[in-house]
Length: 296
Image 1 (tube, rainbow, N blue to C red):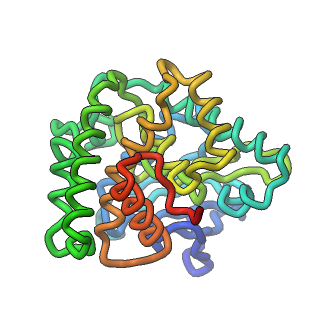
Image 2: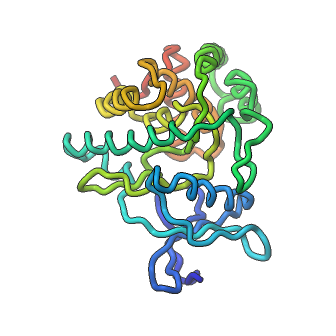
């Protein structure tokens, strides 16, 4: 079905498992190899089929469960530039169009409701019995201390972070809606038309689950704290997302603590991990979920 010899690794992620290939018809396609989590291939295929027509996503061409060959997912190739390559050099009009287009996706995802949180366990998108990987952020932090870079933090700063987590848990307990969460909804996984600002595809769904309607907003704006673009997206989201209130950004950054803690605990210190650690330290120092590590 594909020309594996001509496979070209695709930039943007850290998995090293995604390639541009050519199918028998001569058209380009994207091949994702699931070497680390082979059971995820049919789940991701189901998710793409679920959201197609609601969210811009590639077409599923083929899916293979693990067997003699690794599990894989073959999808159509979608043209577009990664949002991270377009946003910061965009003129004001384009930036506003990008904000509208990306918020359209956030609103669509927040409207795909589930009865409760959980991870997807099979291609029928059944949910795990466990609602979350820990009982709360305080326990999540504790699980990521031993033998990780977080253990090297100053004890007083760690104690401050634990208090932030406790307060964030109480805040997140006020959210009573559950929806589809992409969970890696950031500028490297959003393809856009660099001229019109339209979103052409949202890719890399391997962390998607049922969770908070604020999680993807927090992920998207993780490193955009305090910027005019973040405020524009927030205002659009509050105006249009089901049940969103004026404290949406605070709830979003509280939700994003799950990811920030996991990132800061990683041994591999690539750019995103280092930036996450900087943001987490700023939050712990100030006690402010919206704190930024930006100078000034």
